[in-house]
Amino acid sequence: MNRRLSLAVLVVSLFTIMACSLVSSPGSDSPAQGEDSTPLSPSAEPSLESSVVDDDVFPLTPDPINVTAALDTEHAATYQKGNYNQSVETEAADGTLYELMLRNDTLLMEDAEGDLAIDYDSELTMTPVSSIEGLPFSQGYLAAVHLGPDGAKLVRRAILSMEIIGEYDPNELIGFAADGTGEDLHLYPATFYSFDGKTYAEFYITHFSLYGVAPVLLSEIEAQQAHPPVNPASQDDQEMAPLVRIEPNDDELTPISSPKKLALEKSYNRLVKKKIENLEKTSCKKVSTVVQEYDGWVSKVEKAEMTEAFKNQIERDRFAMLDRLIDCIRPTCETCLNPQAGVKPNKKDVDLTLIMIEFARELSIQLQLGDEKITNLWLLANECSKTIGRPLSEAGIAADGGGGSVPKATCP
Image (cartoon, rainbow, N blue to C red):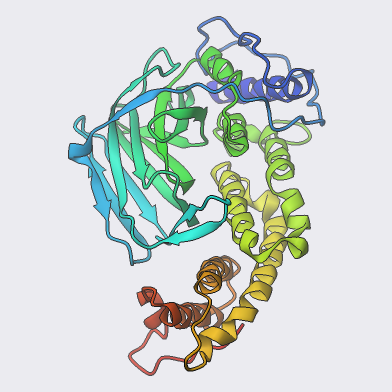
């Protein structure tokens, strides 16, 4: 059996073990399944006879591992907000290159009630990690970087890439993430490839924290999965991380349904299904949070190269979220377009509307609804910003694409 097939069979078995453990003893303190130092790509062939259990106990009882990362501030880079499709880059002392490509640089922070608010003031920073203490991987790590402001969420996922000196076997690497500078360590979906003396890692991210790459043994993956992080979304990331790396041809070898597809269906049911089904009952101030979390799930689908399998579902869900956002935008829309003289608009309501317009615009782009609708949302955001003295979006002002007159915004 060749190396790729061995990896596929191995990960299928690993997925089966994880699924069964969810039912039998969630969050238990039992030791990891494997105590040997088997590489991630062994030649042994685990059995495929076990069937995946459909029941799912989630979230798991947290038993997190916390590590301590030191940041190399001398090599930090800062990004100036206000542009679309821009990137921030930096080179660490060891020669590792980091790049964060942003397709929407609006940063969101959660307030005390868990509601989203636009962060107009914070600078976006990318700082290499110089060392990590307490990392549960015997071979240490290859590269890690911290993105700030810590905890910030994105309207649209960004792409974080790392160019690491040296060729490493992609089958023996894993992505990891942690809050702050090491809290709630967990495995994180990432893809890798290696050639011409370098190794490349790529992450899809929807929030800012610490991300890294480590060479691992299979037993170390199993041991880490026995320590569920506190955040339920991070628990789901940890389970998905080893599965995204099955190559498409390997994935097709499974007879009925691929482990990646099963895992993504489980992830959908855990994290977003009920929220999508209850959109009409969801308060307007919570709808944007649903959209942001949904984008995190879609990121896993895309990283696992399973977009085609979920294409129709994603389209339906995006239309449902866009419809709900538009319903919530309309009440404040007239206030933005036709403010009454001497009447101060409710700043909190307008700020909420600006967040919803950002998400509605991104959904419109993803659904390819046409330049006219997308441009109108840009312009509407600017009109709302004017009423409460917020910065305007340059992309919205220039959205007519020409040098001619700028169209007048209308309520969607």
